[in-house]
Image 1 (tube, helix red, strand yellow):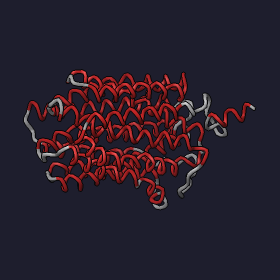
Image 2 (cartoon, helix red, strand yellow):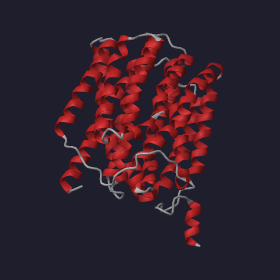
Image 3 (cartoon, rainbow, N blue to C red):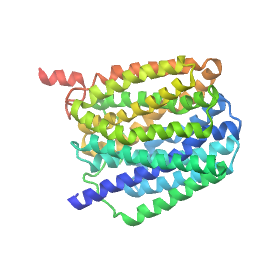
Image 4 (cartoon, rainbow, N blue to C red):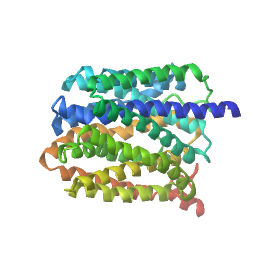
Length: 394
């Protein structure tokens, strides 16, 4: 890829991330309050909904077969269209099964986009620049999310718009942005042709383990941390939005810094810092009885997750160039094995004792910390985990 197209491809990655962050952030910010206030969900109902939401993620491996017929860039755009349509339709079906239907549609777009976007990022970026640039992308996505939360706060709190109007606004604006994206950017050629079949490689096993555990932790945060704030502490929609605003505002500055830190100290140390912090956060969730402390934990939790780009850049350093697309598909399925199971099963655990859900999250963080220390100090092809490092040294 020449220098001009390389710059344009980076702008395209940023624009796609902005669209996804704007639409999905609006949807996710309103979802918990919408389900509790309009559809009268219990913790078990929320677990059911989130498990259905993650089924398309579990099936993300099928993306590699779609690539037999579509270019990755075209596929990413179509996935964004599905995401926007699902969000637009959400408010019009205020029942459990209506929500499941619109959520699954949104989720198909979301997970296919995340799969292909991950592959394109690792193909279009140089290894040396990837951590810092991915940090910047998170920062731009945080700005888009801030705009989403500002719109919700203004239209819901000040102007009194209902959920139907708000979901429609986010879906319609997102569709307009996708059309603009498709119109202004050229089709970029992949630097290296990608494998169009599925596989698991033994040398990537540490990456697979980290990906699986990330999916488990993320579900506990996404499903149950917000639900804790609403159910136990009575946070209203505008209060939840203010917390999310604080998260995203911090990420605008923190995420690019995290990318630079990963470049400087390496993936092993950065991920170890993340998982140590998450152990403390999850234990805090289990014990907290103060609404302000719970809010602080929610913000810290969100910030630590920005360090997860270290998993992507670790894989980029050890992977064969032709493996990016297929492995992105497989890794999303691995990520969502736990994601399909945890919401529904832990929803029943929640009904018995909510603290047990968060102690389990701390356990996943402990396992992640152990796995992160299997990453070599200088990962590369042939030096994928610490035993290969020792073998080379010998």
